[in-house]
Image 1 (cartoon, rainbow, N blue to C red):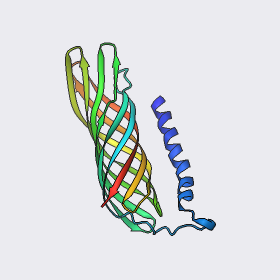
Image 2: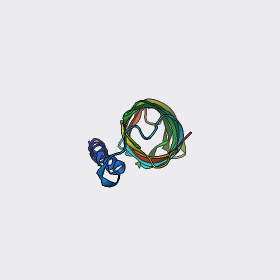
Image 3: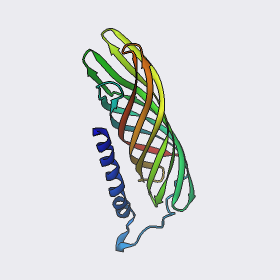
Image 4: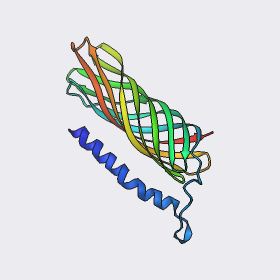
Length: 205
């Protein structure tokens, strides 16, 4: 429930605040607005990101959290003056973990393969995204450890702003659901549901 409320608050913030940001960025002197097609979003890009991940483990009283960071690679198609679609893959290292009793549960790494689609307002892109997530989870007990690679789904939203012809900055929230896998150390299956708020920069080439 706590994670659900936090996800709703972050998504509400993104949805409510970004139209105002878009209007401010597009406004010229005298109150005129830039043409929607002035900034070209089409093409490949590569970038880096840094964020914070928090979540809960299914079947265990653990709430892993910690900083994450990584790189992304993607491609955009501006199919209409205000419509942009694309695909993106990223790989993240994560410090999200939590200790409960003698156990420690962590999510050392994960990655996503997602589609993106949104509305472009000159150099501001508001988008929704979703797709596949894959990642590693680790359970430790004393000197013993057990790791699994899990697959699941992810969805979210974000805003990306072009501040130069080849450079953009973005803020993005993702809900990440890594499916349950069996663990010998506990005798049952565990998965990870988490939220990820991250900020990044992209270079378009």
